[in-house]
Length: 375
Image (cartoon, rainbow, N blue to C red; front, side, top):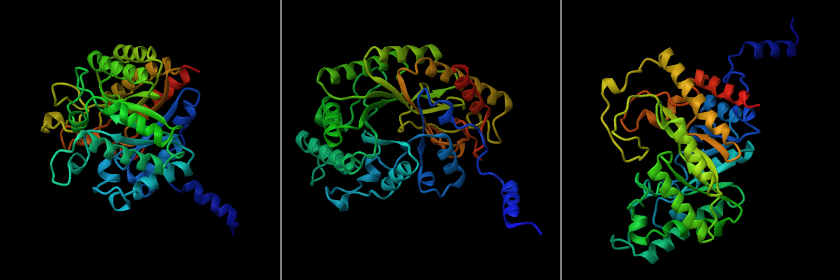
């Protein structure tokens, strides 16, 4: 009869592993930059066993996909406990602390996913400048203050620029003016002086928008306002931005004297359904059979092309590892990527390093090879 310890060893040997025993991404890049992932509730509540195991194994920084956005964390027009819902945000932060991760708060001021009441007075009319500034400050001090010393960095302002680099005409801009960004950073610093503070946007690899971001950061720095890093989202396509455009962007930001964080990396493998590349969540398009060609899986030639694309992107990132402090993927597995439904709903996309079952793709191996190449 087998001893209990021998039986236990045999059971462990033949049990299917939830996560293959690859070298963790965070270990491969530990001398370069943090490796992060955006989390949905299934991961930080640990109800998605495979996804949670991947997060714990591979990532040392986390960002909440939605659970710290205004509509989730402050859904009702009340400055007291009745107005806020911290349940999921508390679980997210606790998960990060439990696993020794660098915790990001996302995001404090954005034109999207904000309840309509935020910009209205008690009569439902547009709030005035003083009223909206007061509401912004109360929200930031409450949210950042709750997690002071626990959340390491905040996406303070998200997507404030148009594609030509001018200021987006959002309710924040229309009511307060262009200094709403400076005030948001001031309030975040007031709430937690030690936290890193980021301006976050997409398409910063394109010259016009990049120049707008540069001017914005220069203005903040001239006013003595703390900004730790520019967050470049890097929602990339298979053929754009080019490696040279990525490099040009990083070189331009380096001259500003601020660090860079790659905040929302993924690679869209599907045919374009909009004229211009965008990550604006309001963008909508109709799916067609031609725009959704890989419903049964990604063919080998596309797997190889995606791997090559990720290798190209990471080669540039590693070249600038003195500037970049974090690279965060917007998601963990293809199954739950937002790109399955953006900008056309119901498509089957493959933008991340792990497939729908949580298995590493050739793109994972390509990224790991880039890490080894610079050692």
